Length: 327
Image (cartoon, rainbow, N blue to C red; front, side):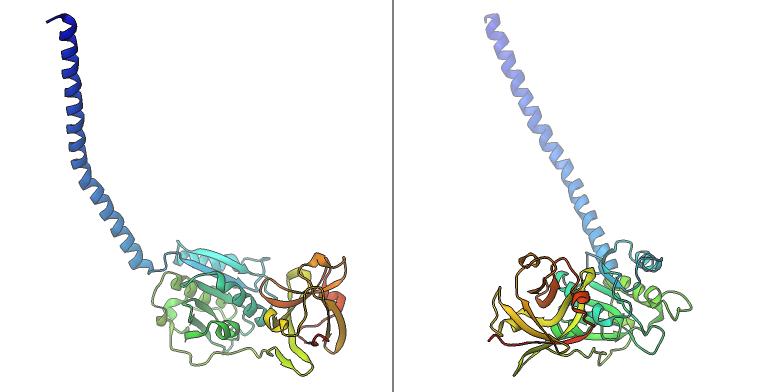
């Protein structure tokens, strides 16, 4: 056989041996690796089951926090430290800590405005508590949307109850869920609401906190309603630092008066008459001019373009408001 033929034959044999070896080793490697992958999955499942057993089904560990404490001292930081000691995996979201001091209606409004953006299982801790240390109850309530609210029973849940419904509420009496051998009479945010909220975020059985509360304290809110003279309601709040006047009238109800964008609306605030243009945005009127609009939460509101409506119109809260029907 010529040398060139012998060389070609040897090359072919070597190539076939190389291919065979590669296939054989790949098969062996796969057989050896399969148990390792199975073992890894098993370990992962065990870890997931352990976490679920420890923290419950609420894997998000989300707690939404709101107070009127302000940020000038250490109160908020202390509350968060208590929460994180109980649940290190906790994600704490802040609504605000600048609620108007002692304003339960502002707290109720912010709570109702924020909660729809969070899912079932979310825990809300709200501490606007002018009655701290008194006979008012500290409670945990579960809404019919499966959200939990840890707060004083002083009316903070009124708007949540009206819109979402309350499935059950319980008074916090179990000392094992609190912290400290001696509770402060003025800092239940630290000693009661923070530890209860953190424990609830772990998915433990919240019914252990204490007995059922049959009836919650409610705010006395004046409902908006149609009357012979028009649509009556109330200016209940201002919008942050801008002084926009927020009413308890929703946009759908206001639309029944017949006004359209650009119309001049007749209204009275505490009996004082005004005529204000109904627009979509602040810039639709000149600087310094008042305007009527539907705010981001769907309520009728009054503002001044780049001004403060409460100061310009000299409105005290709360104030009755009446919008007349379109002529």
